[in-house]
Image (cartoon, rainbow, N blue to C red; front, side, top):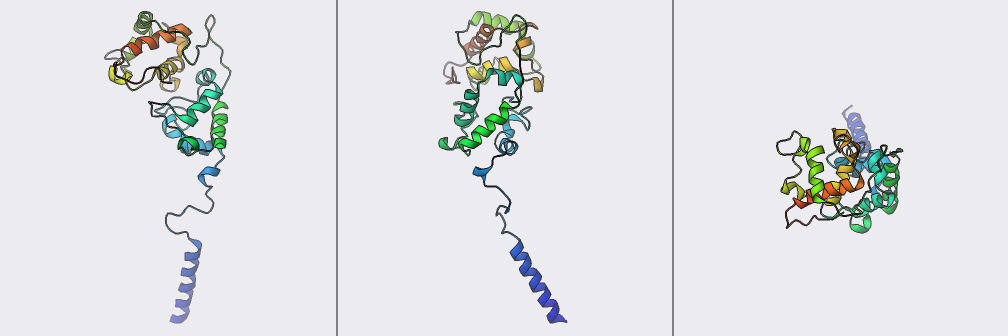
Amino acid sequence: MHLALRAVLAVAGLALLVACDPPGKPGREETPALEVTDFKLLYSQNCSGCHGPDGQKGPGRILHDSVYLAVISRESLKHVIEYGREGTAMPAWALSEGGPLTPQQVDILVNGIESWKQAVSAPPGAELPNYTETTPGDVVNGKRLFMRGCFACHGPGARVGLVTDPSYLALVTNQNLRTSIIVGRLDLGMPNYRFLNAGHALGDQDVSDLVAYLASLRPAESAMGNTK
């Protein structure tokens, strides 16, 4: 009886050893990282930590937003994913730049993010601002616009957060400021450019003026400047 029991236990133990992978070894069904082609999985693994699980409500730039996807070109979006943004927390993701993603995976991410795009029309009498600055901004007009449309939420002691603090401005680029003004953060309650001019739309030059004003408050030794 004891010999039979021992034999059964030995066979069961051998079966467990054969069936189980050593600790730390990936499951047999796990797809190697460079072979993942599912957008949702790629986005979850590489983007959601900063940009939110569905492109919203993350600490980084909102991506699932029609205005953002209307102003940024496909080429610019792909370039940012591949090469990151110098001077910011956005790293390069392309294999050629030391990142984890193949060219095919970068294209899958671009296609997936662009699938969130919806048609956007500018308000009557206004045009959708350009993604990048096309004309120099006017500091004086920028300050006027800030006091009229931004100060209530972003001035000293305001309920949202101070954006005129030199320490903050030393951490953000002009392009970051411009994109934030145009796109806003509707997922967090910040209006986009359509409502930031005393309830009306900001023009392209207005956006440049606001950026110029904020940039004028940046510490002179900061390297942010016009980094895009």
